[in-house]
Length: 255
Image (cartoon, rainbow, N blue to C red; front, side):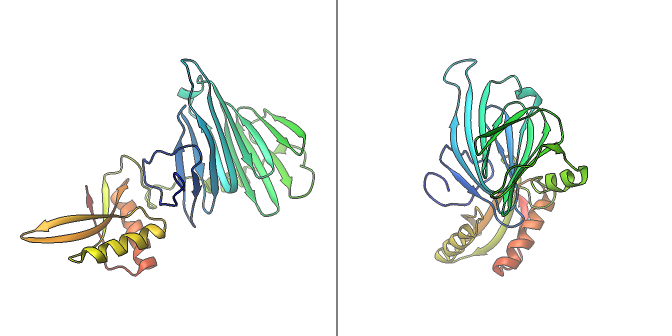
């Protein structure tokens, strides 16, 4: 939801404080925050960007509050951004995490909220209790309605499996702001029909666009989605939407 309106997320779209992201089955989302950190979301996640406040002066503090209402997320500070002053807080279910220059993975799901510190330092507050974590690859586990378990090492196999839940997979339908590939989903001479398809696709979470192309003296109305990182990503998307919406064969090209 952007500016109070529910709409599909487009690659490269600028988000504002108060926006909310809901991801679908199999989805991944990568967000770049203003001070250089990255936030990754997994499938069927819900994230509220409760606060995004850039520094008001040189060498000021970037402030953000991220409310993870459902699903998995990962917050990573790139090496080049670690000198930036920041005050970032993430609410993961019942746990509140103070994030600085760090790499942390967390998830809220039925029955538990849990956080893995991959690198750096964090502080967690839950039900009035405070926990400081500084050991890499350690796990904070909080069962619903019960006291949090003692912090301990995370199983490497569990960490690898969990990390994959938020990691975009090349060739699996990735879109980004620099993506040069377009998936043309259909072409018709019916402008109103094209608009109906755009509305249907956008209701389904896809940032479809209605454009026109002249072939000879005939104007065609095309419905397409831009921003795919590779032809392979476009092919995966075309196959998925073809199955979901019973569309005719799409074609892929650079835009």
